[in-house]
Each structure stands twice: as structure tokens, then as C-alpha cells.
Length: 390
Image (cartoon, rainbow, N blue to C red; front, side, top):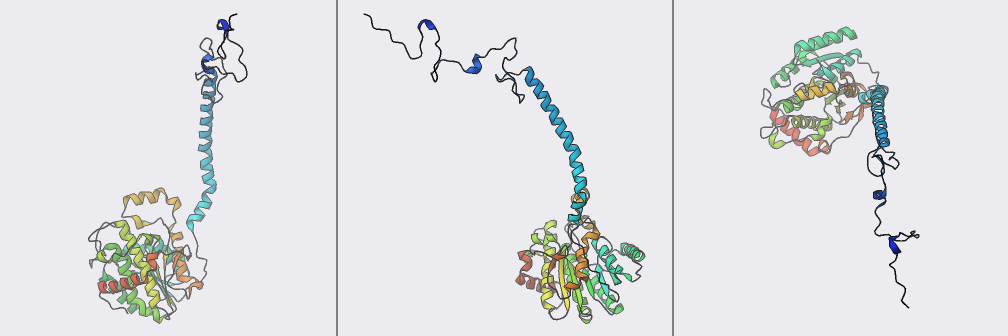
């Protein structure tokens, strides 16, 4: 008897394919996708609902229809965004403006009988500061280099406020001779001084020097106001309580006092030069406040905010950026609010040596709190200006 022939697992006699049992292995079987057949070039399987063609991978009429629908949906979404975004911006605009405007001075203090000096008050936040103080009844001295613009500003303020005590005096902070002449004339004409607002400044100047050989940012923003304050301080003390308000900037965070190269003769970057001078404002105020303790003369410093003004006129790029993004910048009136607050707010009668922004105390950089650097800067400034201020 012949032994029964053994068959391989899964093999069939005569090449017939058996019904596969559950879990039976068919290693020679083609992938399911290859076994599918197409008729007349059309895919016999259902089209992929995502529009990528049939499940066999071939494009099909159903896929084309889905792709067309997807494209239509994209255009509808784009059109919806084009309509909804401007609407949302329009609705949000008042809230954005309110945030950009920052704090406002809410003091109703009157200043009749008070004498105020505001440097650089022919335009920008200086002009708006002078306008507000004139509205409160103060006698306002507009101290500027450009007399024609100053007279135009003073005339406008007098007409608007009805206060005829708005006076123009020439002051060029880039020339110590002009500063001394201004102080001498003021002291001869005015018997009182209650508020000194050191507002004027320059920003992003190409490298240049003042009449006395100081780098322009340092000379105008710091040394000029340092000398002016020195010359007028005794009158402020005589009229105490009195206030000194210095306008600095958030840019002081990027500044350093480079004692080895104060005038930028070794290396110069006009953006950093501005930052250095604004740090000098903060340090000057800090040391001045310490020295004035017990005199009832206070000294505070502030950041007005990013203001749409002529300050960036020396930079073509910044001028255009300011125009493009003006919606997100403070107006000069909004930028003047913290200066006004520091000058008139009753709650600041005994507050001194502080840094403010948006009418409230603000954070000062570590370099702006360095007392040793402040004392050294004071000494170097006196030496550069040829004065003794102990």
C-alpha cells in the first residue's frame, strides 16, 4: 500500500485554491489593492471622501468632485476671513486705543500764581504739557531753540486757554552759553519758580557734537538740563514746595554710562547713544533727589510712552514706521499726561526720586538704580560743565 501523499500546509490538489480558514496564512497572495480591478479606467472602489482619489490611489471622478468642493470651501473661508477680520478690528479699535493711550492725569489742581518752565515746548508732548498747565492758570515759560515755532505754539495756547501768561524765551540746550544766558535773564525777570520740566530732547541724531564738544545726545538730553537745573535750583528752593520733572524713556533699559567713551569718539551707535542719555536722566534724578532731601523740592523722572511726534525726525525709517503704526502710538496729548501728573498731582507732594509711566510708579532698570554710578556721573558732569555742585 502506498503511503498517502503529504501536502504542504495550505496547498491544494490540481492547483485549486481552497477556502481559506480563519487565520490561515497565504504568503503568495497579492496585496488586496493589486487584486482590485478597474473597468473602463474608472475606479471600481468608492472614492476617498477627502478628495485624494479612489482608495486604489488613482484619481477618479468622485475625487475630482470632492477636490472641487474643497477648493470652493477654501475660497469661502478666505472670503469670510477678509470680511470678519476688518469687522473685528473695527469693534476692537476703541479698546486698543484706550490701552495705547495709557493713564491720564486726573488731578484738578489749579496753578494760579505758579511759575513753570517747560523746555522744548514748541511741539509734541512739551507743547501739550504747556497747554495743560496754562489751562490750570500757571504762568508758563516756553524755553526753546526755535523761536518762530515757539511763538506760534504760545500764540495758539494763549488763544485756546485765554491765559495770556504764556511767555517764550530762547534756550539752546546744545550750547552752554545759551543756557547761562537764559537762566540769567529768567532770574532777572521772574522772582518765582515752582515747577521745572526738563522735557526737550533729541533722538537718533547722526554723530555730531554740541557747541561745547559734547556728543549731541549726552549734551542736550543730560548735560544741558543738568546745567539748567543747577542754575535755577536756588530759586526753586526759595519757592518751595517746588518740583523738578525730568523726561526720560523706557529706552533707559538699554543704556549704559560708558565713562571711558562718554562722547562716542571710539564707537558710536545713534540708537544706543539715545539710550545712554536716557539712563543718565534717570541717574541724575536719583542723585538729585537724594541731595534735595529736606528742602521741599522734589525730583522725579518719567517715561512718556511711545508718542507720535517729531522726535524721530532724524531717522527716515523710524519716521515712516511712526506713520504706518500711528494708530498704536500715543498722541502728544496722551504722551504728556505723565509729565502733567508729576507736575501737579497732590499725592506726589512729598514723593521724590521715583520713576513713573502712565501716571503710576514703574520699574527702573538695575543700572538706573546704581547709586555709585549716579554719584560718579554727577561728579563727571560737574567737571565737564566746569561747575561745583555739592
